[in-house]
Image 1 (tube, rainbow, N blue to C red):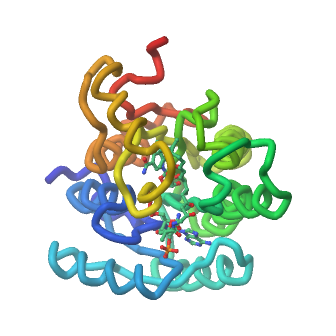
Image 2 (cartoon, rainbow, N blue to C red):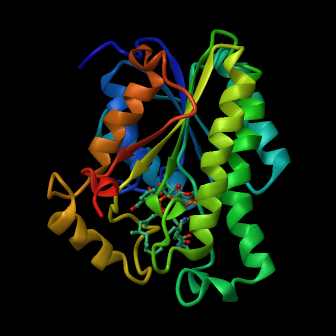
Length: 257
Ligand code: NDP
Ligand code: N5H
């Protein structure tokens, strides 16, 4: 237990189950004394989340539905959060989506609809939620999103999602400039491969995981708790001088040739 986020109201988007990166983040934020507010899309995720909270004796301040494909849903969710919490001090964006059949084969075969869907849910959503959340971030604070190395390098099969993450990382920088004047910082964590519901069944995931143990400087896998602690750092005052940054939590894999 530490007091890095004591009495801070933090919104966490993207817990689907106990393997979610957002759940690792939840545990770190809870240990730091934060008041937690959650958003979910599917009813199934809400049920899983409520069970997890119960089992871990974490009291959520609020749990609200939010489909990031839908502006009205985003507006409604943040209005409810703002009315309930008064002030928001932090936001964790941990959502992404692309069609499974476009996460393999040639990137050149990506359909227009598939491209736009990946951009919509995985990248534009950060712009939309930043716009709504900042209305209630009157005391400044931090926003942290989740990205992957496939934005910087050509990683086989990541394809349309790599391009969405490149846009997401560029958004982090442009948003950081916009909201910096209000004392709000915007950063991303670039995690190494972690076995989650999203990662399940996508081509090439196992190979990407094993190469971390072989080639990354630390020669061990990345887990949700490591991403949780790095996200906590970025949300906390310890990172008060850091914005527009992409922090790699990948056992150092991105530095090796
Ligand atoms: P999860 O499957 O656990 O989480 C994905 C989340 O995205 C789910 O909670 C899902 O909610 C949510 N989501 C999808 N579409 C929407 C939508 N339209 N509106 C609201 N929420 C939506 O996977 P991860 O924890 O792995 O993924 C979290 C983030 O981490 C993603 O941005 C991913 O790209 C990133 N990341 C993951 C890595 C990994 O190896 N796992 C590595 C690097 C980055 P629901 O189920 O309710 O629809
Ligand atoms: C190079 C790789 C492996 C290949 C690419 C994987 C890309 C995964 C990202 C997206 C988010 C996965 C995705 O959208 C899956 C959906 O099509 C199907 N799944 C679902 O609908 C489940 C039920 C819900 C919960 O999922 C979502 N997203 O809502 C990359 C890997 C080494 C690292 C990785 C896995 C990165 C990443 O961004 O997640």
